[in-house]
Amino acid sequence: MTSDLDNACAELEAAIAERDIDAFGQAMGLLWNAGQQAPAAELTAVLPRCAAILGSLHIGMGSQLALMCGAFAERGGDPAPLVTPIADGLREALRRARLLRKTWRTMGEPGPLPSEESSVEEYDALVTALTGKVGEDEARALAEGWDTLNLWQMPATSILQLGPEVRAAFPHKGELLEGALELSEDQPALNWLAGLLTVLDGERLLVLHRESGRGYEMTITGLGDNFQLHTLIADALSGPEEEGLLGDLGLDPHWAAVATDAPAEDFGGTAEGRFNPADGTGAWIWNEGQPCDIPLFEDRRVVVLDPPGYPRTWNNDRKYPMMTASLTLDRILPADEAADWLAKVGPPQDIPLI
Image (cartoon, rainbow, N blue to C red; front, top):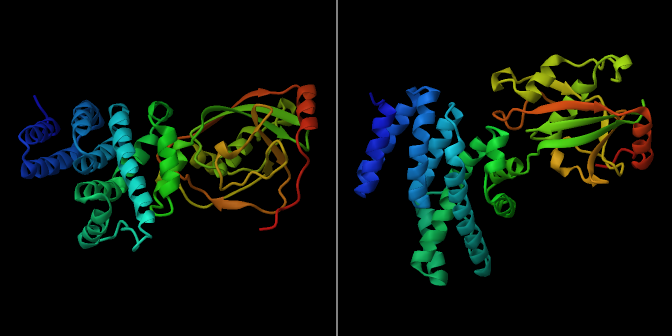
């Protein structure tokens, strides 16, 4: 017995085979409605078919289906089949958008580039302006890339949050990151994509507590920013000193829950810092940054914990609500090993001028 989702997908496949644009729109509506009622198992079963369709469409029509598929993955469907077609579509949209931006600059930037709120008329004006430079067909192709870029980055941002396996399998990361950073001033939502493309999974850290002389090896996965890192390090080290930890640090357990996997409805309140984190050179690690920003120090990412120079608080939430995070305490360093590392790292620095 076929489900409503199967039937809707079959109608979409038929519409594409027949090149019937009206039937395509109707089938998309049916697929969306069926997906809102379908359980996760049905969504998982249909997503490989959707991914195959997605890989056959040009980026304009594909962007709408990609957005829908991303929503199905958010509702529990397995995102694995979507990784390659979404990454490929995003890559092509970015390629065209970057070329458009470059061409626009050679034209002296005759006006602002369209935004998400721009009208059809504004896009038509863009095509008209570009046509004199690159010809009408190329002008329309470049404008389509610019217009659909946000639609492609949204499902990419969704599925990249859904597990380290997805992030590991996501192709073209370097190229996508370069493009996202290049265009983020014009399309700020790309900053969210860039952050996900640089998430560290299975990354080992060396954490040193200068005041106690203790050292620890930890592993992090899925942290979106250093607010999470600060919270989870404090949580890992809060415990009996006789076991090599730092004693009771007075943490609210809600902070660590939110920093790992609590649902968005549990977000709220204010988390508090317990340290002033620095890297191996002694430079401050800003909470607003990401773990990937921590430079290597003797081939290790080193975090040195000093007493806080001033109270540090932040909103108790996760930058990427669908991405679960983990930090594990793997090993407590022997005293002599910790002392050796502490002798190598840079001294504490004064509070930077802001």
